[in-house]
Amino acid sequence: MKDAVKDYYGQQLKHSDDLQTNACCTDESMPGYLKPILGLIHDEVHSRYYGCGLVAPEHISGCTILDLGSGAGRDCYALSALVGEAGQVIGVDMTDEQLAIANRHIEFHQQAFGFSAPNVRFIKGELEQLDQLDLPENSVDVIVSNCVINLCEDKPGVLRQAYRLLKPGGEMYFSDVYADRRIPTDLAQDPILYGECLSGAFYWNDFHNTAKACGFTDPRLVKDSVITIDNPALQAKCGDIRFFSATYRLFKIDGLEPFCEDYGQAVIYKGTLDHHPNSFTLDKHHHIPKGKVFPVCGNTYRMLHDTRFKTHFEFIGNWDTHYGIFDGCGTALPYDTETTKAGTGGGCC
Image 1 (cartoon, rainbow, N blue to C red):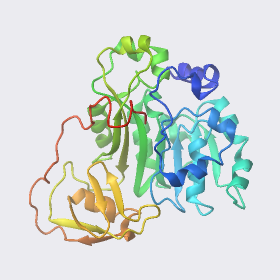
Image 2 (cartoon, rainbow, N blue to C red):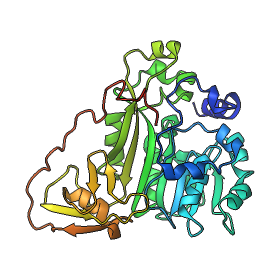
Image 3 (cartoon, one colour):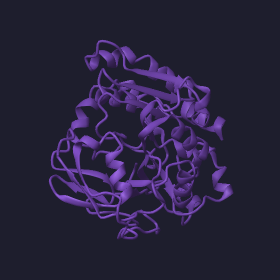
Image 4 (tube, one colour):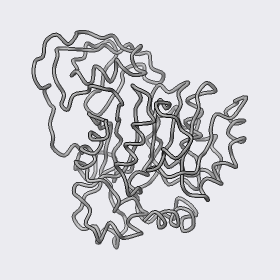
């Protein structure tokens, strides 16, 4: 499948419009502050973009960002504007044609963002073998990936490498395609479905268990939406399998517990994160208003206290008393299953 993916994204796809499904499509609802940045991205980079919206974690000024499957570099260049001259963005991809486009526009984007020197570089490599690249352990603040891990055959290998490269307290913030069941072998070997980001999709519960086994003890779902396949022939092949786009946060924090345990703790958001003056959304179940005492489990407390978010919160409580499992900690299908939501169609990452 690796060679098929290289051929599909390097030779067969010449433009984002060449995709045959909407599993990977541009998210038109991205925050307003990102749109002027995208407006400065080179047209050729835009035209060879096959991701699912823009994966843009909060509070990354000055950070080192690693983009897994960076393609023609659109996300890398957008993130380079957010990290600023004090930060750096590293893109890794295995497709020569995509890397060629990314590399020839480094100086263009340096000038577009007004930087004195480039803060982006691109490396050829396979995501399952990041240990073969010149990337030190514990050196990356945030790892992003945009609808690419489904294309990797050794998905646990990707997550293990990501965990190794992250600094303590760092996070992997990424979007991808997931299925409500394990993909049958015949579909998994279909090169078109695979290239369209469908038949390589993780079964969601396998993903959760794999992430935990790789050290990411408490995967956090940030947002999700149903994927509709607007291609009758490919939809017929997939049958009743339901696909979802989902964004996750995986934190590298030692000692997180397997479930959400209640220690009577709470946080107060100060409203000081750029572009988030009124509230901060850690994940799908933690939308934290400014100034409100917000009860949290022990893991959530640490995801805010032991990471780059610490200075933007006040922390209440300690670990002296355990009150059992935190209310609402469950193990059912985590995604919303409505085909459509008010005012929207089928989802993309």
